[in-house]
Length: 111
Length: 111
DNA sequence: TTCTTTTATCGTAATATTGCAATGAATTAA
DNA sequence: TTAATTCATTGCAATATTACGATAAAAGAA
Image 1 (cartoon, rainbow over the protein chains, first blue to last red):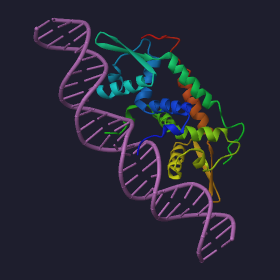
Image 2: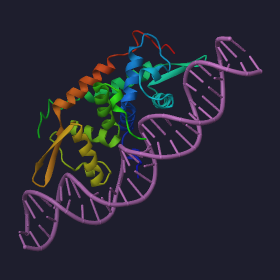
Image 3: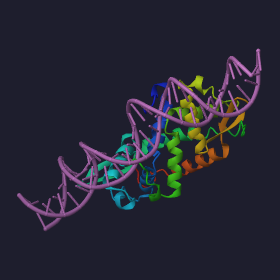
Image 4: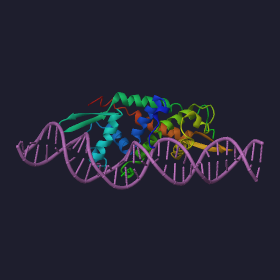
């Protein structure tokens, strides 16, 4: 199969999973780290930073762009990438909502 | 290839990715939702709750258990699953650290 | 004991992901 | 113009994921 049954779940669950999935690779975490820490928006010298091939990084950037976490603007032969602020905080809020829901209050370590 | 090059990244990046990856499926988000909201710790009537086969749910539970987000104790023929409180808040903290790092301050939508 | 219930595991099929070399497309430099 | 730079896309190979039926294992009920 290999085909996720998205119709069984709520839109929120699918959205959370989509965001989590795209963060579920260390290279993409590293890219996010880089963009969050960059003084300016950074293009593809991620190729130097991470030890991956250019094609591989481009693919990771595309995935991050597809879920809306980053955006890129063409600047000559280069592309400036940066965090998509709105979507980033939307994701941030959604996960915060989940994490704040700590089980420690109601059922403190019940098994 | 299909083989993630974990040696290129920091331990933190790999750990974050690991956590995110396991949350990167709506069924596992649904299981987490269920466990967070449950008045008591819940066993495998997730099979009724979600519309997936028993073997599939068992597999998802194992993955959640493998990264330490949930734990299970055998109780007769049943298994009681619940959120692993410590690891849950460790993950919560780690992602909070990332999310709080909003880019809006230094480089407000620069591309 | 045998039967039932509950969960885990095995095996398999379909699909997805990861990574890269090679190639294209677009802009800039000479 | 031609050459160089930068990034995206294509095509491929290796591996991983998702899902489920079938079966196994363990405990309780009859």
